[in-house]
Length: 198
Image (tube, rainbow, N blue to C red):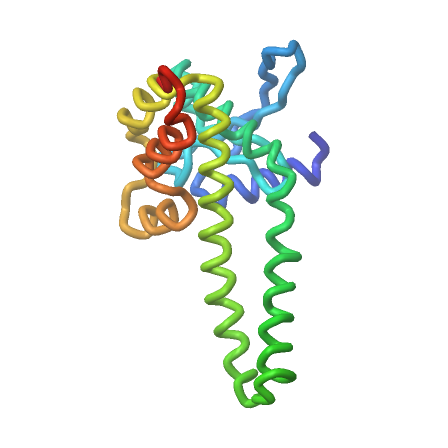
């Protein structure tokens, strides 16, 4: 990893309450190496994340639990494969342009544009929440295909105690990640015709 990517990755780690520890390589099932960044920290926001620059970061205590590490690693690898996540920014600005066009040209109400900054913030939060839920749900679906529903249930029913659990952290996690019961219901509905969906 070059120095610029490392700096930006450290910055991302700092945003979630962690501190860069080291970089390691993990062997994938196909024999290829995958570089991951390990971070420390007393109570980070997440135990793992795929950064916007497609670097996988994992909280150091996760390495002590092979089952949890496998789940988090597979989940973040699924996030890394989601090339379509980059559509968020052009989609967002496309909708903003439509709002401006609708207010000025269709409604002929340019007074409404004074509320545009507030509308842009609200739209960004709503779109980010929806987009993030779709990304995380898709990543968990891909992960469950690999580790199985039973293993997924075991891991999520034993949450990592080193993560933050204050009110603001719960709000951020709630905005960016769908509840586990929604993930499980979606999986079971998508696999309702399987003889054994565990």
